[in-house]
Image 1 (tube, rainbow, N blue to C red):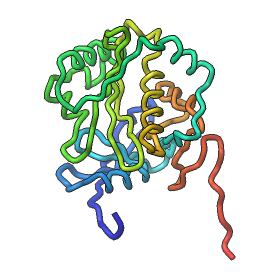
Image 2 (cartoon, one colour):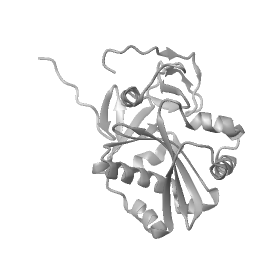
Image 3 (cartoon, rainbow, N blue to C red):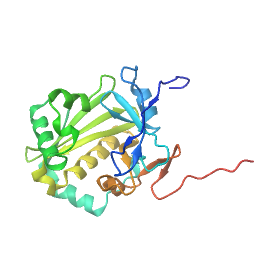
Image 4 (cartoon, rainbow, N blue to C red):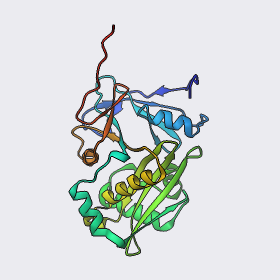
Length: 244
């Protein structure tokens, strides 16, 4: 992306999607701009995320609580609770990597998940077309990773393949099997896949202090946060270099 100029736009203020009572602004690339895997990787490393064909990043005037996250997979060591989740599934768990195509069984699971977890959200109104528009893009390589427990569909993780890692786009799972911690199993699968493929990073989206639904990300260490353009480990501050 060296030397290339990107047409970035910023929205007016709008209610924050993550923290009640806050106002937010969003920096984004317009749909239709020619993108490729290399540009996508560079923008992910600058804190952008993907929704459909659009790449965006929070760009609020006063609040800077949204932190992009990534996990250096070779240094990851599972916690005892994560090892227990993996052991409980054991050989009963199977995974399949599928192309980004409409699958009626996946879509039915997605609808059940939203009805249980986000019944009032805009995504709960999704039909087949909007479902694929939200998860896929014409310019990036996306995969649907399904996890099955004793052949029953447990979870689907939507991931983007990047030159230097995986980007976790979205995960939905069977509400009746929530006790199996499917969210943990999908992240552990993504970590292992990166390790096997020699990809250094798993990008987990935004982490926000005080946002309960994002708190789980801090359970994967050593988590790195993007702070003022510098990736630092969670709990540490970037070193400021003094001039000579």
